[in-house]
Image 1 (cartoon, rainbow, N blue to C red):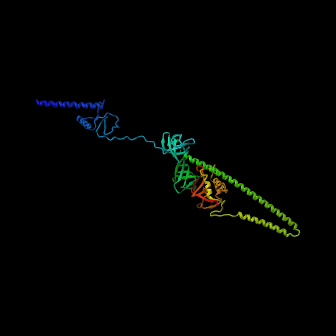
Image 2 (tube, rainbow, N blue to C red):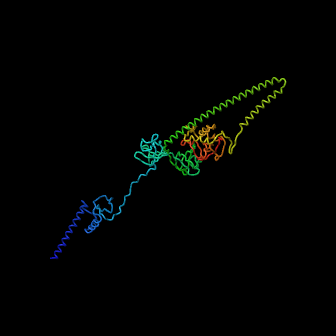
Image 3 (cartoon, rainbow, N blue to C red):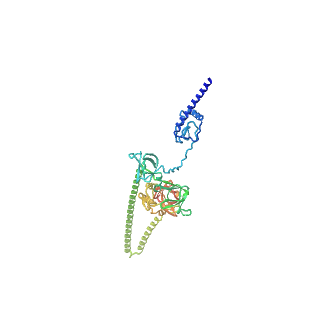
Length: 483
């Protein structure tokens, strides 16, 4: 009896336990799988499932997470098996897909803006059209973009920092398209001396030699050769192997710089006007002196003529008594004329020689004053055939007009000027001396020494009147015309 009661108790407990566990399994699978009817590849035993459930329950009360078809975002220690996530399993390493699209390379002008304004665009202190104007970015001038604020960008160009609306700038690839329109290519020599040739060939004639102290405008980029402008009409080819080519743009101008430039131009125009008045005054004075001298000579000749006539009459009157007196008077007159001619010839024949060539200085004065006067016109335009220090001049017109201020007349061309004054060594050149350069064996350029191994000259249409190293190209000779 007792034994039967024990058996019933065990069977009952087993049955209850079996129904309870089975019921839990059914609820769990229906909750997790939803409408799925198959679990391919899954064959969990009841004991295995219960073990997983027991371990999961100890670490996380939510043993089974909701179904998700987003297999890329499993998170934590979850792993996905046929759409069912089980907490507590060891994760499989998930491979991150590689990007297949090739990113577009960024433009080297991504932070550069070139002004496309009709004339110029104002640079404001702050990003507002009502704010203070600190400078101007003229059409074709470039700036570095340092910050973007809505429709505005903060830029830095030259000495100016401020804001411009983006609509007035070409940026990035758009800026690159404007390089040929607004950028200037410059060649900087990377060797001590470089030959400039007539044609793009190492067998071509050498026009001149240039140094690495200056940069030269590139007119054409032709494969292994670059055609450059040295100065004036001296254009030739250099091997790109020995130069570094860069692109430069004009920069912004501050309001103060613009005002200073206006003052400089006004002062230069006034200096030229005063020089012209002084030259006109000097010319009138010389003409007056010349006329006075001519009048004096005329009066002197007239007096001599009257004196000779009187002596002749006296000679005639006394001729009846003494013929020797007339002869004596004629001899005396002749001697006087001979003495006058001798004096004139001695004065005009004086000259001053120098090493390597003759000649004499053309006037007296201070060479530093000449150099200072010439420097007032730096920045003014180059015009072939011109001689105006403000409206445009070429190299020899520049030197001619500068020395005219000091009462010295120079010939019109550089070739003719190279034969004036006193020849000196180039190494002995001082402020106010003329420095000459040749191309193809002939003198074709002239500059004024300003000291410190530099010259001022009307260089070319791009740079206008500017300063350069005295040896920016090999000098031919130096002449001193004032001293």
